[in-house]
Image (tube, rainbow, N blue to C red; front, top):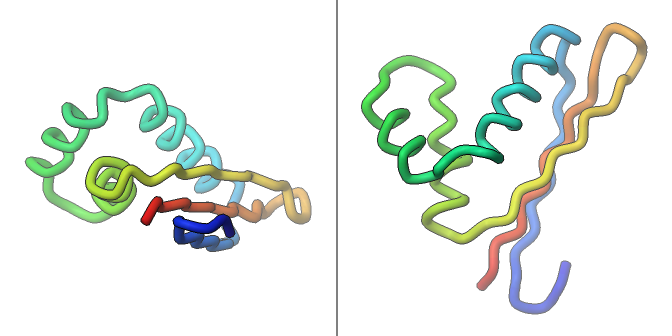
Length: 86
């Protein structure tokens, strides 16, 4: 951690299918117009809206990174790192 920022890390296991789907979602988020994506997702209903990630990016100027590692050939370990300036 650097002075003047908060650092959060989370690791979760996922099947290859779920990891691929999440990785595609991350790629789409990285290249999206964040405000347009925020409005689209805010209007949508259902689980997995991704509003938490968008809120961190927009409201808190967070920097988010992901690492996808093949764990055992069938499962992936996904590490998400979030840095929020104070």
